[in-house]
Length: 208
Image (cartoon, rainbow, N blue to C red):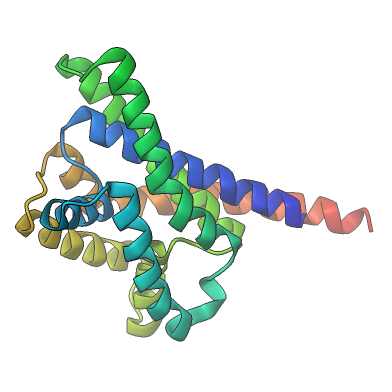
């Protein structure tokens, strides 16, 4: 069962990297955390993947003291894989196919990005093998403030979107959708994956 959860966590991380890639290629705005990080990459003139590791490690310090139970192998996956893998994907696609100009295609891959992001976050949150430091923030806020996960996610997402925008990151339809609706989307998939993992765990326990 442990291997299954780690696999869920890794797949979720790869989905996140794909989501970030589609948002960056579509140029219709990115999710809140990517907007936040892109804002700082503009300010500091750094590679996206490199700054993402730095921001993730800084948030990890807070998560360690606030709720270290949220830290695990999935946390490490996210900090070191998402940004760097996205940089590789973006470079590979642009080198071979150029930038995307067709609006319907950009809208289509944006929709895929929202799907990948919602599923990816839900997968590694429910795997309980550690979550990304950023995804730990709304969980911690919900626990400490007595809020729902959905509302906590919206508060965190909108706040970081504003910071990224003021630092120079561009906004778009993807930013609006992910800032206000990503929490409910993630919760929808969390319910699905929780049932799947609970079923697998029950079958695993019955075999012992």
